Image (cartoon, rainbow, N blue to C red; front, top):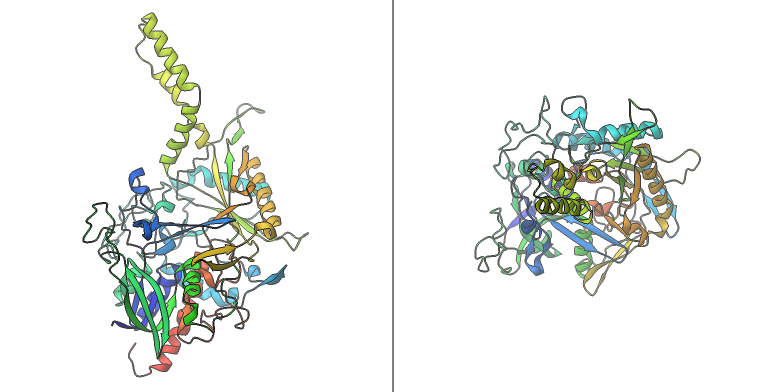
Length: 575
């Protein structure tokens, strides 16, 4: 049986940071990640490959997207070496100091046992490690990014703060698209990397290695310090034993070769063979970092081995206030003809997915308002073709073109060049060029509870308590749309009393006592020395902005305490 000082379950923002810090300090570390590696060039782009890019091992699917569906909410998370960093939009915003609250709400409370001051040095450390850069809006060709210009103007018209948030993206110095990154091959994948090509593909996985995702940063550094990283290894159970823990996992195929097919792909469908059975390893310390849904699910499934777990397990669920809105058909005034308007180009596919953000904080006249951010959103260019094609096929432009060609054939018209007619049939592509998705996130009410139903994770969460928050979000997005001369369309799921989140939080919340939380402010599980949690499940409420930076900072702070305790117990061991 393999024995390690520490086993880390999951390689997202909590797990990767913890693994690196512990390996750097001289501990023997093993990272168990259920998903496979995704080196640059391996992220699917064709419909055939994209259809297989979902996570469902029971159906022999080992892709990147893991979709959970509950009665009132859907949640999209990532499965792969690097966790959520593979599909997030790279935004690194610190949680505002005033949002570390101590508030009660109907039926619950949100009480943060840490402060912004506690986390600031760890925010600094994580930003440095992730190579944070603001979008270089003052240089060519970046200063002509239409969606960034539009967001800045909208914020000014609405009188709200606007910022270019730090992004975990390599733009180069000086910034230039598509330039090889010096030393870029020094990573787990031994793959060259290039600066951001401004193609809006961040959320689908960057095939150019421009994102400073966790596999390129923390995990590569952890491996250089001797950490053992085992992808395609899904943890099923764990239990405390004398001086540590036993951790059992199932290997999905040939782990570690970067290929989901592995050996023995008898079916020839590119998927691994059936699992060969449980493997067990032993660790002095166990750090759960499988994400909000994964960690909570594992703890609930293995609760019989940890009977003293806090009754707070499963509580304080939040979707981090995630909300999607759309600016449609924006227009602006003509400079040469006052009173007339022309289509306003927003071009959401140009640039990284997110470039800027505006903050809607609590208002002076209503301190009960829960603040939020609104960010511009982009997507790959091929989605423009998909949308415009559907608009095209549903319009009468094609019918007019066909009729014209038929009439020319009947009348034997000599005019053979038909570029103008094809231009009319194709349209101008203005629907997508003048529209822009808006991403909202902020402080919804963390009153959800996760539990097991027939062995499956379920969620009891009603968005009703957060209705005032979402109403204000809709009003703010309407204001942004109108300021850009466009129409506003909210997420249609909202009208069905249903939401989707890409930032699920809570389930194993921090608390000052075991009655308030599953873990203390350092992520240590009450009553079980050596067991820690480092991921979004420890949040006692919504982070507000994109949670990745705060999750990583909390993990960095937790790692400091683990290292201190390890050195006290092993004073003679070199580190």
